[in-house]
Every structure is written in C-alpha cells, then in structure tokens.
Image (cartoon, rainbow, N blue to C red; front, side):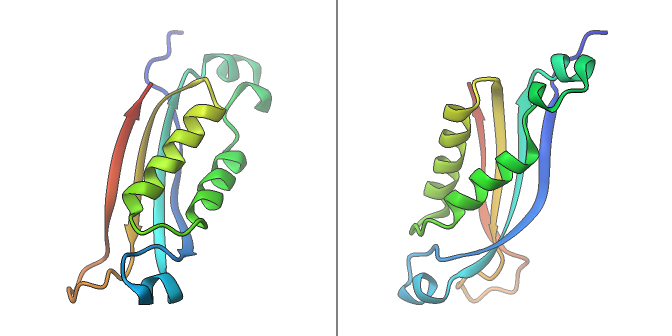
Amino acid sequence: MLLSDSYIYINDIRLHALHGVLPQEQLTGNDYIINIRIGYDIAKAFASDDVADTLNYAEVYNIVKEEMLIPSKLIEHVAGRIANRLMEEYAKITSIVLHITKCNPPMGADCQGAGVEIHVKR
C-alpha cells in the first residue's frame, strides 16, 4: 500500500497566555485555541504499530504549550516559534499547518476570535 500526504493533528488545544501589544493583555492574558496539523511519512508506524515510529501527540502538545507560555506581543511570533521548534526537533516533519486563535481580542468586535494561520513546509 502506498501512502501519500499523511498527518497527525491536535484540535482545539485551550490555553491561557500573556500575549498582546496592550499592557492589559500582557498583565491578564487571554484564552487561546490552537489547532495543529503536522505532515510526515507514517509508513513505518503504519506497519510497525510502534509509538517510536511516529510523532508522539503528547510531545507535540508539550512543545506547543511551552512556546505558548512564553509571552510575546504578536501571535505571529508565537506561531513562528512553535513551527521552528517542531521542525528543529523532528526531522521527519514535512509540513505544519498551525492556527492560533485569540478568543477575546481587544478590538470591540463581537466575534468568535481572531488569529493567525501559518503553513510551513520543509
């Protein structure tokens, strides 16, 4: 069997973090929702049924959480840090699609959130 374009993903990670340009955001923070999809060749894990042959969801989550907890003015900066760290730590990653949504952006709009979406390829 030939596999093409395979991914792991984690949806709707919910974290509180101190990102933002405004002083109040840096003090009280905001809630964020993170979705990530990581492309890699799963052929070995497909055949072996061994966690050592795949990307571990828990490890990916821990990297996302660690980077989200480092305060930044821009979530674009946070997204870049997450993508760079994952690419550096896991050579088997071929692509990353990452969404970071600030749940209550301070812009006076009635919306479900605002954020960034990045697509990174090796």
